[in-house]
Length: 342
Image 1 (cartoon, one colour):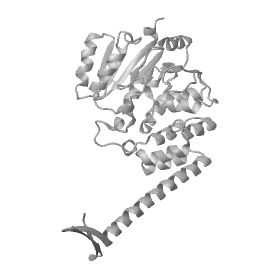
Image 2: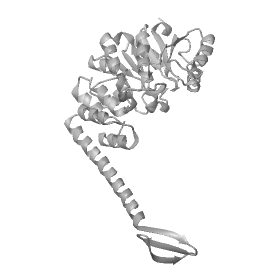
Image 3: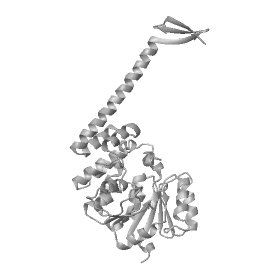
Image 4: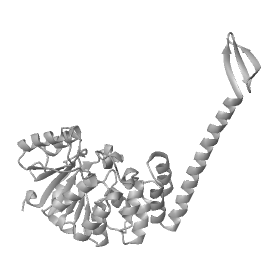
């Protein structure tokens, strides 16, 4: 059986004409091993010229199928729709802004022949590869990396009714596909981690805008989406408590839980709901660390406020103004010192 009979490609997109054009140039290049596979583009009702671009490629490549949704169903629902429509043995759902390296494709093709339930093709810079073991030190990192949609090829037979239901419920956490990974872990399925990156994540996808683009009135959970809260909520489905809490601890790769929460306060969006989600989703030890990070952030805010207030007070008490050849220092509006200007 050929690869074309076993693997199909879905590409989700919305209003990213230029990025999508770059993606097409890679997956349809002469050296691309997937250029002749069945490729279905799920277009979330784009209105920026993306639709016309897809049609141009479709005319050149008869293996491309173009589906334009009647409504913008949101990026996460579009992810689920891709898995729903999958009919071949394996499915690979791609985003419209990633980079590809086909130099190690033979390893992926060999693993497909071996019948693994999932094949991880995105490993960043981590050295571990081979069969996934949930007790391994690398396990929490793998689960975290699986949040990258294009980073894993899945065997469609594992996407059951239960998995689909959980995927729909996990839309507001912005990681519906993590429900597939967690199902595979919970049921001890065979997952293979490749030795090299085949796909590199497009970092433009890191912002919450990817989940709200094109939508005026957004559900409050999505509008204030926080990456770490989405991970913690998703990890609650992991049945092995030890692995669950290790995953929760491993929010920012290769960084401590305290560092991750501290970074969240400094650099990421979050709401009070998501703070409670994180607190409720971790064990007692991490709860203490979480509280410590919150206290540090609170104290830092109070210090900033105190400094700002002090500056305002000093500005009201003291002032320095130029008057002719002199600088006049005033206190409470009364001139107390006159300094000759150079």
